[in-house]
Structure formats: structure tokens, C-alpha cells
Image (tube, rainbow, N blue to C red; front, side, top):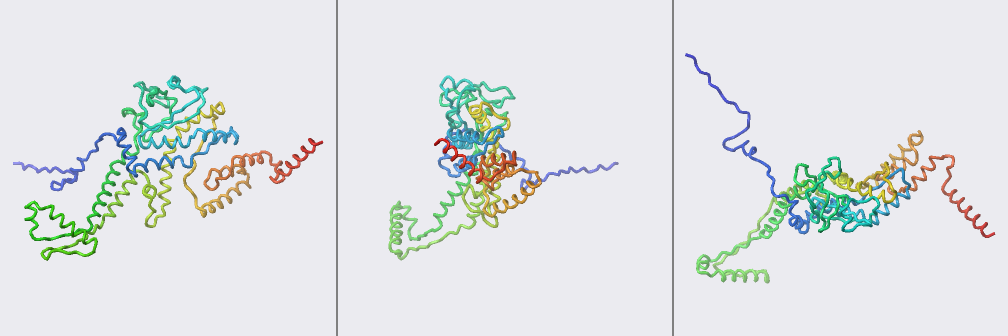
Length: 451
């Protein structure tokens, strides 16, 4: 007779029947609830009532446009670039973009309406013409806009692929070419209406709510930090007899007497006791909730809550990380919109968009005087060696200085002057000598006119 072998089933999963270890983890699932971005009233209430929500949206938009940008083109002179910057100031481009990025951060989408010298109710429905001149820009929030119809741009190679051909703006029909759309966070193309963005508060909402609830609860607990206890004979009988008002009147009289005279008079059978409650650990809990909000908003505590760095940290690392975040937002949200606007304004001013047209956002990082002098000494030593060996020219070194954060007073005229010296080194003359020759020439002209 053969003996049957025992078989054992071995499982390598970590589970416990008593603690349900391993089972609860499998049960966790992330479910999508109603989108906060589509709830205009809730977003507006958060922006107007919650200082955290407002600061998350407003601070990022201000920092994205605070230092603004520098435009460049080798095909244009310094005077022409200055004229272009003057046109930007006339159109208030910087402030309009700040408003549009603010609405994009809050509502998920912001837009800039392009108003030209030929804009009217009928022309607004047609594509923007090359002969139209931009005279005004206006920031529009997401909930002032709506898709005009289900007709979308189906050309996958079009920059506006998936967007409506026309939009409603306050009951006016506007062609898509007359709008510059700025999104908060992008939606996947597989999502419904991917041409609208997602609010920056979408995934911060729950964290902000928990922080506000925690702050409110701590504030209410502090009011209970001191507790007065009165003991009196016959209290239960008085309550049973419906004499609650007499009890409240008595306690109010005792408390008011104590407040006025700083003394307490009680019946011989009554007792009074005061207890103070200690709330240890609440600060640490609140700090953790605060850090969770800062992490969810992708902003350092020093920026979001206005508190100085703690411990051995100087706060510079947090600022550098935040400035990197702002720089990435400038590239993803501002650059495409500015390139579209530059395409219109360059054609308006110069008749063509030059191939070497480009711009760079000015860095937010500010050097201290010690850092500035140290970097300048290193730069001077290295560039002097390169200039002596013919690797660099003086105008190229000045261009690098202007683009860096070490110098901000070098003008385009200074660089053009150095370029002129580089093109004809034999004609180099000190500036004072040139000015002297100009004065002699001016006097000679005046004498000839007198004669």
C-alpha cells in the first residue's frame, strides 16, 4: 500500500487574518469625485475667503511676470527693439498676461482677447487678418467663455488641434485666432473638452480644507484651556424641578463678581475649582498640516506662509527650488502665448517675423553683494584671458554680462558701440576724444553759418 504524500500550499503574500495586513492595502482605490474646476462658485469662494487659496494662485502669476522678459534679434537694431518694448508697454502686455495666468491658475483656463482697429461684432467671427493692427488686449477668465459649437479643429498638425473654431465671450462669437488661450494644468486628449485646463487648486483642495479645519479646531480648544468647576448641593434636584434659569443666573452673578473684584463669594455648601488644560503636541500637528499644504501647492513654506526658514537652513535652497518651478511654468504657460502675440506684433511693426527672433525670461534669483563681487571677479579673470587669446570679443563679453544676474545696466547701445569697435579696431578712439571732435565740428558749423 502506497503512502500518499502531503501537499502544502505556500503563498508569498504578506497577509494576516487578525490584523487584515495586506488586505486593506489591496482595498485602497482612488475614485474621481466631482471636478472642482467645473465648480465656479466654490473656486470663487475659495479665492475670496481663503487666503491660502488666493495666495497660491496670485503669487505664482505675479512671480511669473514680475521680472518679465528680454527680447533679442540680430536682424534688428537696438532702437527697433526699444520701439517694440514701447509698444508692449502701451498695450499693457505684462499686466494682461498676469491677469490671464491668474485666471488660468484659479479656474484652469484664462484667455487674452485680441482687439484690433477693425474689430466689430461681425469681424470678430472671422479669422484675424494680416492687415489688422492690435490696439488693445483684454484678459478673460474661463467662465466668461464657452465653446460656440461642437465643431472642433480636426487638423492634428494645427497648434489649436482639438479646440473649438469659435468661442462665446459674453454672448459675442469670437474666432479662435483672436484669442490666446493659457491653461493651468493640461488635460489628456482622451478627456472630455481637453481644450479647457485644470485649476491649480484641484489637488490642493482637500489639503487646504484639512488645514483650515485643524486651525479652527485648535482655536476653539484654546478657548477651553481654562475650565471653572462649581459644586453645589441640590443641583440635580434643581434641574429636575426646571430651575435651570436660576442656576445660570447664579453662575453668571458669581463670574461677574469675580471679574469686578477679583474675589469669589460662595455659599458655605458650594465648592469652586479651576482647572487648566495643557495642549501639548498641537503645534507639531499644525506644522505638519502646514507642510502638507506647501508640498501640495509646490511652494516653500517661506513663500506660502511668509515664515523664515527654521533650523540650519538659510532658505536659499527652498527659494531656488521655487524659482525653478516658476521658470518651468513660464516655459509651459507663458512662452507659447507670448510667441503667438509676438508673431502678430512683429508683423505689425516690422512686416515680418525674423528667424532669429527670441526672448528669455529674466531670472528671479537675486545675488547678494558678496556673491555679485565674487562672481564678477571670476568672470573678469576668465573673460580677460579669452579676449587676450582672441577667443572672445569685448561685445560678446558685455552680452554675457547683460544676460547674467551680475549686471543689469548694460544697454543695447553699449553693446552696439563695442561691436563697432570690433569691426574696425583701427578706428578706436576714446569716448572723450570723440565728444571733443563733435564739439569742434559743431562750433565750425556755427561759425560758417554766421559768416
